[in-house]
Image 1 (cartoon, rainbow, N blue to C red):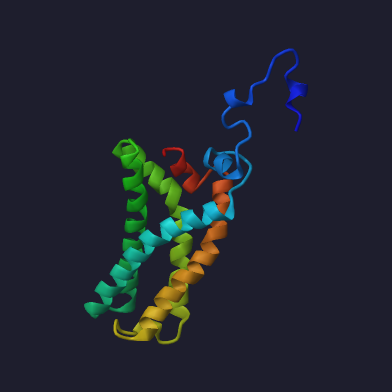
Image 2 (image 1 turned 180 degrees about the horizontal axis):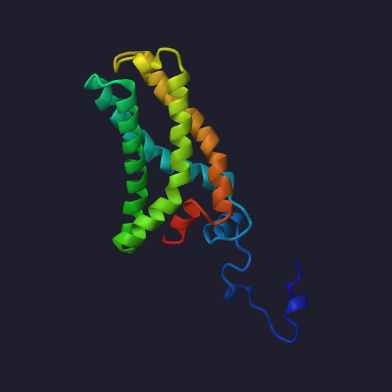
Length: 178
């Protein structure tokens, strides 16, 4: 692109305009309209999935070990998935200097849709896998349904995060505070 057409009569130094020609990732992180890359979306989804997986596995292990029924075990697992998913973002933005109230708002804005989609997909996979809800911790079916659900949830949630980041929502909110 020839920038001289819109800078008549002045010298134009590209070095003085940092970010003038930002990449799609940078624009997405800054709330731009260029869209997010698949790499950015995958990293955001993986970040979210890590917190969700820790919480959900912990909840499933606790509920299964205590011989709870399916519903209380899933409620605990989903609750812990949201708790851990939010806390990963919360701690990151607190380290960046936000106060607790602002950090909570950022974490909720950044992760709610991502965690909700991930948990819906993952738990649907587990619920629809024959025998998975009645499997015990020592059963391969327990772990394969749980981990397989995470894999499918990652594949479905990544495009959702890409769409949200490209519109300045979701994890784009977090990147404004890095």
